[in-house]
Length: 312
Image 1 (tube, rainbow, N blue to C red):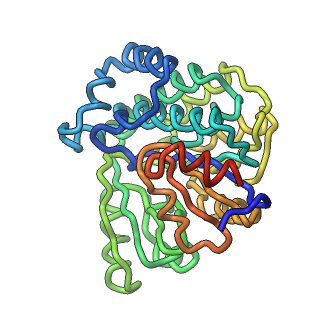
Image 2: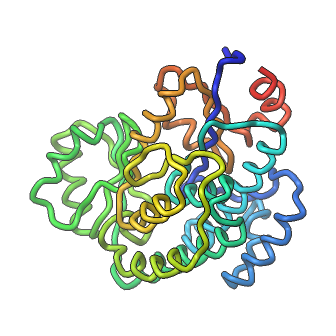
């Protein structure tokens, strides 16, 4: 039950949250129309059609050069709509790509600068994956502490996402991921699900992309956050522009520490976690966390946010 003492935190999803027609439900926004045009010019893709066609092959949306700008645009539009409705979050956070939405919403950089960063990020990651192919598997029914020893002695395998007490994503070379998955299935009593990606994201195998992206991050103007931000790397609540930049530089080759992020969010309990963007992935990861009420704005709509969250 929400009360006047309940805090709110807004979170933004990353890759994997995309689906056909994901822009259809986004509230009308003149700025969004302009951003879509800019994104198409930067990416060379027909993002308007790809984001609004419900019958498109979902496999097309697994291309990181397509999914990243679409998710960024969708999540930003939802986030702005929620803020315009009157929500005053005590903090914002985003999962991997979603961190760029959070930083834009918090005023660290403009939405236009964020879009340029995201399009460049998607292209650099795709290039790195093509030059140094890899794989990622979600491991279900296990936490990071229990999983880690099973990776000992296996080359080119890392933990990429510490998502919850029941989900960890491993990333690395195809051979290494295959070997690690064999061991986990045999010895750890867990499930392993291959992810539809071509690269070993959030590992040292993205170093070439990270080095090129660092130059772009250094050139981009960063401001202190107007809303405190919880970042993926070394999570803590912060607002200093240069601290944020230094963590973001490390993000592409570092694991997403979402469990630590959720621990910080739960410290605000009672707290409502408002997921702004396509899907309900982050709501699912927070299912068993006490003191956290989960809301997906795409699922419940802005009117619910206004009446049940903001008005309390």
